[in-house]
Image 1 (tube, one colour):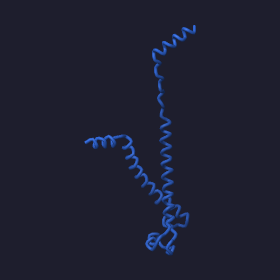
Image 2 (image 1 turned 90 degrees about the vertical axis):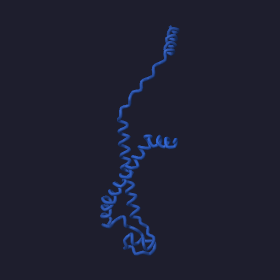
Image 3 (image 1 turned 30 degrees about the horizontal axis):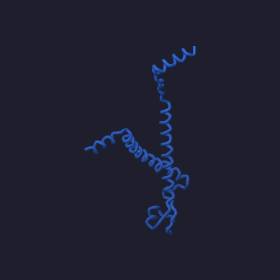
Image 4 (image 1 turned 120 degrees about the vertical axis):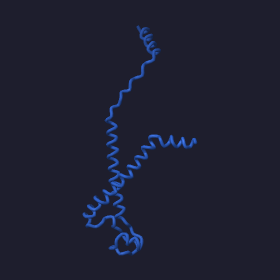
Amino acid sequence: MSMLKEFKDFASKGNVVDLAVGVIIGAAFGKIVDSLVADIVMPIIGRLFGGLDFSSYYLPLNGQASNLALAEAKKTGAVLAYGNFITISLNFLILAFIIFQMVRLFNKMKKDEPVAAVAAPATPEDVLLLREIRDALKK
């Protein structure tokens, strides 16, 4: 029974719940960025580099013909699929930039929050009394 209580305490902590929400939102956000790169950015880049699907660029390593589709070339042997690597790298850079901007925005929001002035703790009565005695002796 105590292990169930420990698990409940662990799962109900704010950090665990925040992490779970972050992972779920991150996965959904990753899919959006994947679609952005695959469906919008890479076709434009592919058009600039000759109108081909950029993710299907590869170098044949097993003597395949270089005019085969990537899937067919992989069936006949090893290929160096550098186009797919570039697509995924671009996907990462866009995702990292967007997350950087979000963190920057959240940090800026944190700074703008007014910080409550911390009141100085009251001086103990015995210290006040000693100061009065000191001042009286100086006179």
